[in-house]
View 1 (cartoon, rainbow, N blue to C red):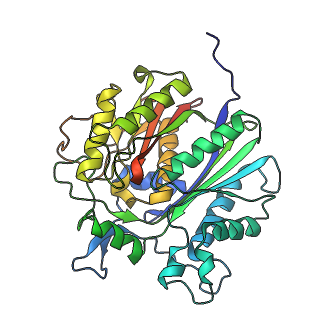
View 2 (view 1 turned 45 degrees about the horizontal axis):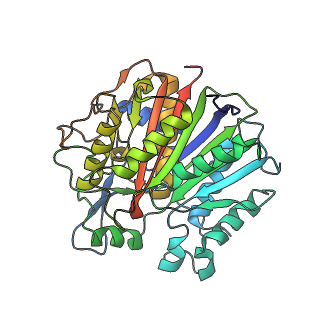
Length: 377
C-alpha cells in the first residue's frame, strides 16, 4: 500500500491569554511554578463557583466587543514573529468559539452594540475587517471540541494546497448565561477543579483566547501530524460511558498520522473534572492502550475555556514537546477513575517526541490531534 504524501504542516507561532496572564511565556512560568488562576466568583446562584477570569479590562469605548478585542490582539501578537500576512489570499483565518459575543445578548456589553453583534458571522466580520483580512473568516462552533476541530479543518485546507498558512484563533467569555447553563447540569465546582482526581466534583469555567499559526512554507520546531473527529451521538450533554466517540477519534488520528499508540510519548487530555467526562476519557485511553502514557489536564490552571480550550491546550502541548517538559495536572492527588491513568503529578524534564491532544463536547462530539517535535529547544 502506498501511503499518501502531504506537505508537512508546521506550528510556527502562537499566543495565549487567560487568567494566568498574557503571552505563552507567562503561562509556561505558571505551569512550572504550579500556579492557578482559578478564584471564587460570586454569581446570581446560591453558592459561589470557581472561575478563571481575565482581569485586564477591555476598552468600553471601542468599536469592538471584549471578545473581539482579545482575539484581534492575540492574532496580532502571534503574527509578529512570522512573515504571514492576513492580506495574502494564501492565508486562511479560522475562529473557534462556542458563545461568541454572548455578553451582547446578556446585556453586560456596552449598550452601543446592537443585538445582531451576537451573531457569529458578525463577530467574524468585525475581526476580519479590523485585521484587513482578504476574505471572510471561517467560524467553527461545535461545543468544546471547537478549537481542535478548527485546527483539523485548517490541516485539511493546507494539505490539499488551498492555502499556505492558517491562523486559528479561539476564544470565549465567562458570563452569567454560560454559568447558568452549567449550573443547571449541576456541573460547576465551588472549588478549583481537580481533573481525574477522586475528589473531583465539577468544572471551573475560564476565560481565554489563544492563537496558533500553521504553515506549509515556513519551518517550525513542531509539526501537526494528524487529526480527526467522531460523534458518538450518545446524549445531548452526557458522554458515552464506553468512550466510543473519543476512541474512534483517537484511532482515526493515529491512522491519519501513520502512528500507533506505542509512538505516543504523552497525552494532553480534555479532563474537565466532571465525574462522567474523566471516566469516559479513561475508558477511551484504555481502549487505545494509552493508560501508561504520562497524561495531564490543564484545566486546573485557568479553567475550561470552551471554544478556546483546544487552541490553548495545543499551544502548551507544543511547548512541552519543544522543552521536553511534563507539567503536572493541577489539583490531582488520588486516582478517581475506575481505570487508573498515568497522571503527571510533578513538573519534570523528560524527552518527548509526540503528543496526543484530546477533546470532547456536548452532543457527543469528540476530536483528537497529534503533534511531533522536529527540533527540541
